[in-house]
Length: 76
Image 1 (cartoon, rainbow, N blue to C red):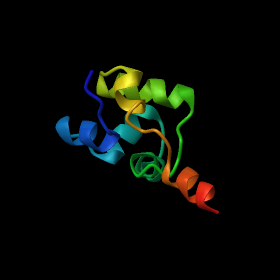
Image 2: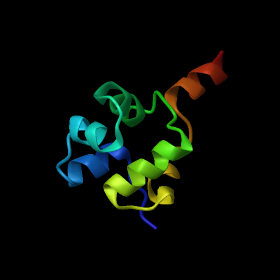
Image 3: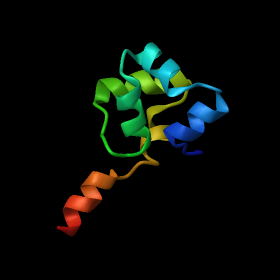
Image 4: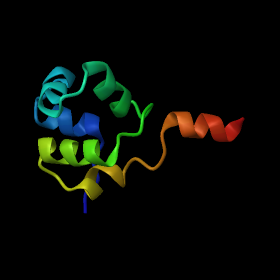
């Protein structure tokens, strides 16, 4: 099964962060933070993103193991 990052999915579907935010009901800033792996989305948001991009949850979120903030905290 191919795994995708949110950025890859957005680019392949020609969707801006603003469009993804509008569809999911979230701000552009929040979408950006998820794409940059600075925030972990809730399970509900993960489902919403999978629906938006028309892929399975596993195809998106198994490719994101930990966020940068989790890695940073682990080093402290």
